[in-house]
Amino acid sequence: MDPKTLPTHTQDGQWGGRQVIPKDWIELITAPQSDLEESHVPNHLYSHFGFQWWFQEETGTVWANGYGEHFLMVDPTHDLVLVERNFSGNSLLSTARWLSSGNKFSGSLWELIDTHAMLVKISDS
Image 1 (cartoon, one colour):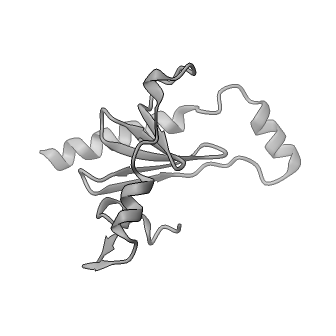
Image 2: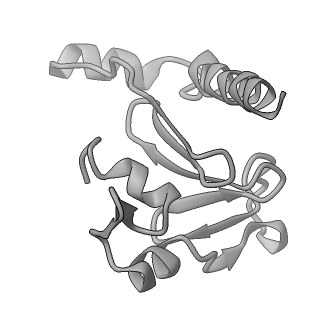
């Protein structure tokens, strides 16, 4: 997946009026496969999980989370795709330093959530 294909996730796999990713595939990979509310692992951000996608039922957003605080948020309702990339090390030493830092989900996740809320507010007004 590259940045050029990300918008297709908000449009059921279509881009420029053409079906570039099969709609059935988009539906399958974005369908919740497990209910995190019934999980023994506490999770206060996401409600469901499936195919490496995390679902936030409250906002209708779908997330992909990567190593080093890399986040991708897809909001089909508002036709938004937000990406957060962070430095997580480019050498053994800097990676070890990042890994030993306290909270891996520092401000960037919450900043992305705040940015999304701001964009939704603007688009809804």
